[in-house]
Length: 131
Image (cartoon, rainbow, N blue to C red; front, side, top):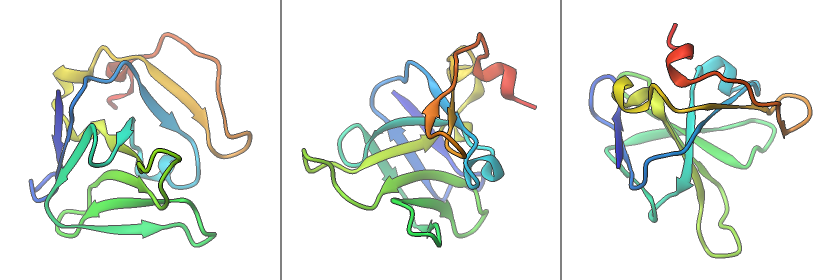
């Protein structure tokens, strides 16, 4: 299990199973937020607590980015629509968790800006991205 909270502690999340990797995306939002995502499904393996606000891209993006109304930390995102199994794809920002719990996880680089495809893997781990 992995847990995370925003800076002030008002918004939190729990990921029931430890992630095998995290995703760094270079889309116009993720690169500005500086997030590292671990994926799951809201209400299934991801639970959230606290009151968050949400932002959806002006171009009609298919996910809502959630952030704390008090300290502004981006904590997670939730898909706008359900998949074929009635679940909403979700990801939590692992930068909100204890670094020691995630430092050795591999980082998957995703090109959300141009190709919308996974980029070639390298040996980078979360600890290499704490700067």
